[in-house]
Length: 509
Image 1 (spheres, rainbow, N blue to C red):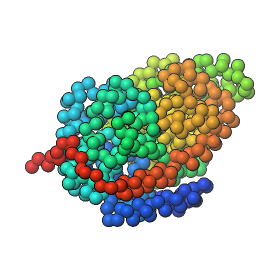
Image 2 (image 1 turned 30 degrees about the horizontal axis):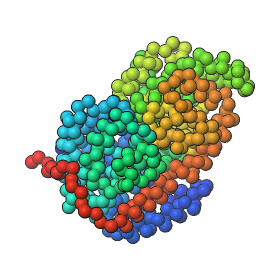
Image 3 (image 1 turned 60 degrees about the horizontal axis):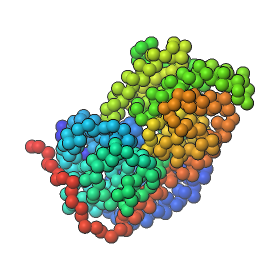
Image 4 (image 1 turned 45 degrees about the vertical axis):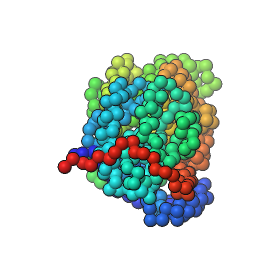
């Protein structure tokens, strides 16, 4: 099957009245609705299209259906497209580009990578013409589909906006190579939207905007869970011991845990009865899983002695440190098509866990979460973040890292790396604990000890963090900014069409 672009049906989901009912959101929802009416009037019979590279796995794929559904309810006709390449090499190229833009090595053979990127982009651009027309607005998310939009001939091209969810606050040789690769494809874009001002290369400042992503408080991943429901979810996915669940509550697939040198559908021992430090992210080297394991091991060895020197209830702290477990969970790599490195990262982590002394390794749990049903996956993540004594996000590089806001919205304490968009969300010792060097086991161990030894302080920081998320990092604030950007684009005078990066290529007969 040749490369194509496919429209994804967007379910309606939660209605705006549900968001109005959340404390503190009635005014922001009214402001959003007013701005959306203006955009709808300017748009007329035209449409807004969102395009990315996968239907599942990762924050963008999770965010887009809710954004599209709410924009439609607000009267802004919005559709979702997904790029479907015909060659796994395309995602190896875009993963290498992703690594470059995060300052890491990638794309050893740039010439060959560009040939692959151009071939897929040119062929998919032909199919994109079946959906968009020149008067529409096309918002392209991240680097993967950027070439598809850029290859449209000027007479077929809608108004283009690029939403870049990744970036670094500094530049090195890798980032320069990444931006050099992207440069010809970005020429026709009228607006370029980043998650932080510091991520923006100087050459794109005239076209730039800054927009923080946000979480949906009514989604399955973030909705409130009563204890009965939470326990039921963990039983259904197989992470909690207990009697068999009723047939109606069975999940399509159970989570797999690395135990005794193999993957098994087996519960995490004592998940409800022992404190758990939990990180839920893609299995990606930039998420810093590989440093959490030695950090946790150091905490187990040195934590009880460290607690003796803290102004805390020493017996309580020592008890918590003696029982605490580390849960490292993420989507099964086979269900994340646009990240070909996930399986190898997970294999490295299983090697690390297996090499630990048995008494420590028994407290480190690697978990693959099934992706067969996205609702069930989201509910599982929700339950894990709520049952955690603290949520970790130890990213080495991070475009934004909404898992931090997800945890804070639930009132769960956070320990995270002081990098990228995480430090936009979390103020150290006000909303959570930030670790300056996420690769330093001693620093990670100390932060883990602190969050366990001072539970009241941790809870107060989480409470403060929830208020910050309500104001800045919910989907309502995100959509309000989107309306500002769309209004600006629709009101701007027409510009001479920029040349295409390369020509559309019709499918082979």
